[in-house]
Length: 360
Image (tube, rainbow, N blue to C red; front, side, top):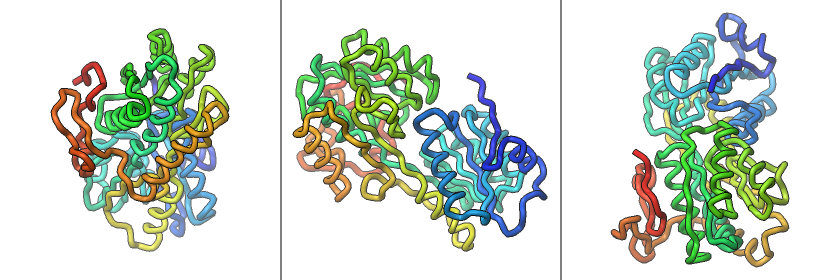
């Protein structure tokens, strides 16, 4: 899929000029760059990151200039895009997808005076910070709703790539769905893309044809919701954004990523000269994940149970509490035990009850 557009808060032409002529940036402004893996109109993950950029503009006004490049492929193209943004005079650059990790590190070595922030990765440097949301926490109440509402006991899940971030989400959704309904099964299809509406729609349709009446996704477009709406009697969960256009059904609630406060805080740190390389991983309690409105198709008792799960996690309860075994039956968490963050960050296994293999 070709990735293409270069834009900024002031339009495409302004962004192109700003990136090619560093001298245009006023000295009293902080120039803030964003590299996006999808289009800002994806209705999901990139949309919410761009809402964070817009919040920076609203908060700081003429103290900042923002530039962004959308639909940047992970890999060599990302390194070129990040380099161009650094050459364009950006003071801080947010790179917002896991596959931008190595390109971010590579470019940061060449621009030691530029601050870089990489989302969902784990490699840091003196001028590279990392940040992410605990998306798996958002899957917990949604898993409960899925387990309670499925009639076929078959729940479909569209995964982007088989990386720990996505595997954690699958496991969290399954654990909570199974606790709500021991008979549930998960059918998983790997799309090998973050954003490709055609592939996502095909995956959703395949899951529906397999008898799934609930669709989860860890991909970024609303295409699975469109497929669920067309099928009828299938529910779905918004991913990364509210996906409100599909309320009240098939979208019955959503996992919403909240980036605005973090972006404002980190830009302020650049302004104050207090920016340091940090690692941030926040969930419900930190306000980096929210549960969207639970709509009418969800029974009142199930809604109350889901909200209680969300509230307990926000207050400090872990989304994974033992006993939980790995897929092969070996123990992972004993009764009442919870995992360390390091275990979650390297998760490469399904929990017991999920069928199929994780692709290598």
